[in-house]
Length: 510
Ligand code: ADP
Ligand code: G6P
Picture 1 (cartoon, rainbow, N blue to C red):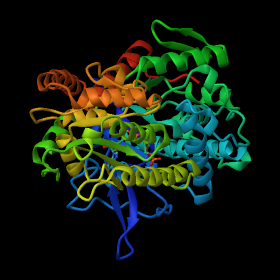
Picture 2 (cartoon, rainbow, N blue to C red):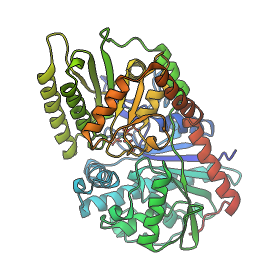
Picture 3 (cartoon, rainbow, N blue to C red):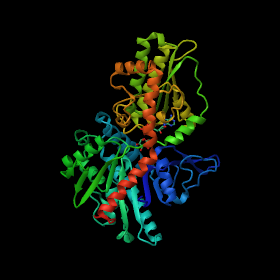
Picture 4 (cartoon, rainbow, N blue to C red):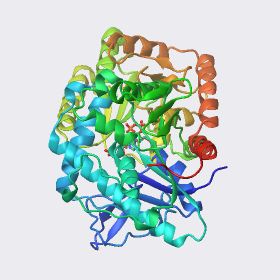
């Protein structure tokens, strides 16, 4: 197995730094598939994780170790494994709230009408990517000074926040000009020790990649594609996203492409494109489900579950409208079924997200006002973060998981729900065909979130499904999630990188 020194780079570190009552910084871990899969490899190989520790971090402040009570997957990451990137508030506003979440997020989720195009956002995006690249280069410098032998390093960049970083790293190392960047705006970088450094650059996109007709709306599309092509390998969740990316390179940059072997030629280099559907820590969720306390459930009342970040791509309002129409169509279900919607607050500085919060509060109020009885309310709505231990109990004890994104890169909630099904009869999964996960999860029920009546009919089918059919479907779904879990994803990634190195040597070409 290829086991390089790993430098993982993501916008967020696996924890946020918050001030405690003594005004000291401490880690607040964020759960997530990425840290579960990648964390152990970073720890074992004494690798590094580069990222933003949150707004409380100021350059030069030491990163605290995790507290002894911290049992999260990131707890074992020592401060020596962490390289923080400080981003000031003004830059963060234009980079993260602006370009990442008001431009790329809606555009890549096929909602161009919601996307804001603004040159200041784009400049901030380039600047932030430059800062990340700069930090990676100093990490490489440190590593190459420390290492006695000619070790190979794998720089693994994650997600849409960092789409330009690879090209910048490559250009700085090879001392070529940074395409289109007015250098005086930035620190001038030199990388004297890296001429002979052995490293590869890989990128994984956790959200969908749009087709050319959508991507071309972005005014600086060529720079964006060139930024991505600075990598040696680019991974996506599905084959469709891979094909979209390859087609964008062919149409936008006139690259030569090989759609059979998923290759893009760019200058003298060939970039490998690869579908790598992420999984979840299946065994961990099984254990959480076995140990979770019972969810308070009225006897005889069925539970439909929704779990999401509060995001307009998740189709939560249509889910609620579907549930409302179900109760109108089948009044015998009044008092017999509850929808539990758990929504984590997300990106609250972005207007679309504030609007969604308001619209949700109103809709939940309307539906509850329409149907509630003195003893029962149709919707239980939690606006907040729930601990994974508790979440596993909700997954386990729900009769139906209703997952209705208009578009979703993968959707881990669907996989976590399946991994927690340990009861007999198990729950039924309903998923939108527009979530990446639906491509693999053939045995789930499919509901089109744009068609409210389809949500209603699919809910009825799920609520009335015979127990043996539920069991048959969930067993297939569980087998797949168990064998293609998050560790399988990590191994598959390392295997692809190993093959790339074997076929073209360890040097990178400018
Ligand atoms: P996205 O990456 O767009 O947020 P995913 O479904 O792929 O969507 O991943 C969401 C992750 O956030 C899952 O791991 C899920 O367990 C977690 N999550 C979602 N809602 C909550 C919540 N209310 N409390 C805690 N964790 C949550
Ligand atoms: C999606 C993105 C991640 C992001 C997460 C939470 O999963 O793919 O990169 O970290 O949402 O969003 P946030 O904006 O809070 O980081």
